[in-house]
Length: 137
Image (tube, rainbow, N blue to C red; front, top):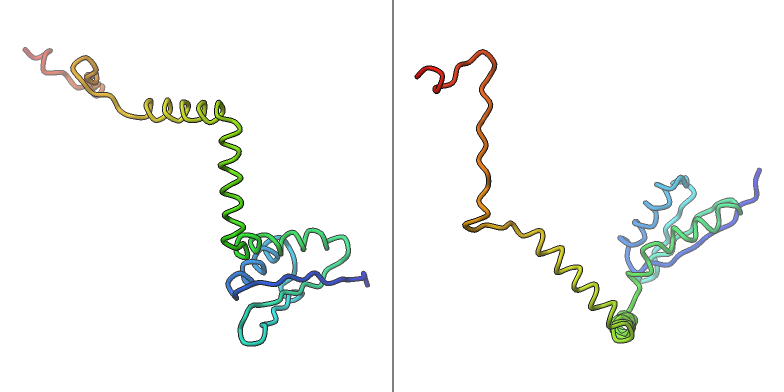
């Protein structure tokens, strides 16, 4: 029998833990090898999965999948936002180019109407064998 090991993860809610379980199951891990253990006083859940050594890294990566965003604090998000502002200040020409490109795309997506830009009306083809009104006159 192959040697197994345990990969674990901690989640703030049952929903987050269930999402990790779904990621594991949809990636081929057996549902009966995954266990959820509630914390005392309903303050979160621990997830355990028994897997072979060669699958340990993949299991850990799948466990961490969404917990990184759900466990992120407002302070961490503030640091990320300030990093984006610093990048924009460091590369103003890139930001200007991206803005011009976005404006060009939006401008070309807007339908044009006006005196000289009326749509061309095309004659509908007549069914084969049917005579047009002009032919009868």
